[in-house]
Length: 530
Image (cartoon, rainbow, N blue to C red; front, side):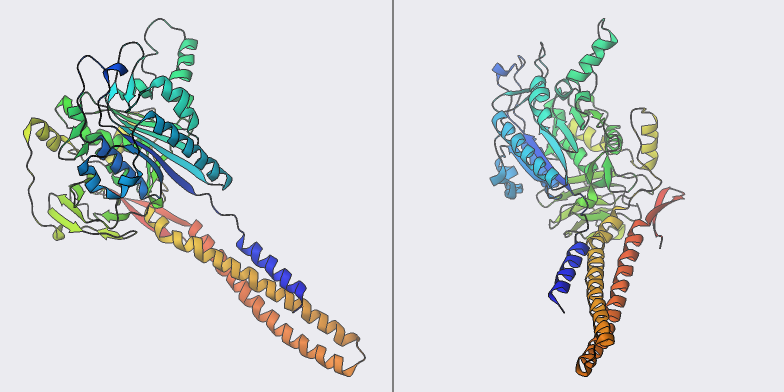
């Protein structure tokens, strides 16, 4: 075959494989955990605040969770010996929870987002803080860092303006956090002010200024409420991570949205009788997209657990170090698929007993009551009893969720009509990203070959019809018959490959989820329309 046909084939092959790639979601984290109490010079109240025990554990557990999404995370914390033992892979990555390191992390994140934008990818940032917060007189509310107070002015003028990306999710677990972040218009209605004054205040000192930023905040009344020895981390952080791992995914689409997480947190804390132990949770959805997910579990490499019969009731999962992974209590008939860290020995505790397992990345494990062995848990003290008896005592699922969002005009509910099944997204994702490009690429190559041999066959036919030399005519006839056979064969196979790629494309685009109402809740059935 001539050199020109080699060039034609190369161009055809490159064109077949150069289909535009879908934009990827790149996860990032700026995770801060500061156990230290603020210095008196920072504006701390007259009564000294005690050193926290588990803010470093909160930061480490959030970092470990984000790692399951391949997140590029800046961890700012000083881990104590126990936390280092439980998270040895994070020790070398930790930096001090200081303003200096925070500024450095923000600058590094901005560079990464610019790189993603050039590549056509989308960036999502989780900005997490666990530690002390102070509400001082004279606009001096702040979150405590090692070297400086993180004030509202600093947050609004230096930090949030330099956090670009598709979405930024603020998750804060600290006393008086709402006075610093101001997810909603807390104080503007007080006093004799005009509507223009209120609008200017909202635009300057609330998250209305940053429409791509959402917030999930717990304002605890005391450090005793903020941390619990049984969890070995903050109660609110444990609840948030439980919801983000899928326990809040009420419609089963793998996307944990703000309304789902808020309703899940409300159910988790509703029956805690002791006011000291109940966090005050404030949620603000990103103004630019009220349906923005905090995470999409289809993008995680975690293992998956599911109670297919919905018979386990209240479930608590921890690892071999006693680190809590998640906790949930599903409504009768509601059995979400939850993501757990792969390669770790996990202990699943329920009313049916205990179960130990080591799930691997991407593995799906069904939990059955018959596999559990009996065990008992004992509470210690009044606060322990209030938390143990009250937390996750209300079943959560579609029924609770619908009732919760119906009472909230500011929440946009998730769709129960055509959710995208996270199982389908994971199971078919590999085939979609590999099988289809191979099919279309092979089709392009084969059709290019067929085109080249067709042109050569026509050239041989032309020579045969116009030559007066017997030898040249015989050679032209032989080349014509050979090239015609190759052209027909490769063309047929190429068309078949193109047909296969088109069929795969249509198959994936027509995969839907139908909802079949059941006597005890919503039963999801996967239907392939092809």
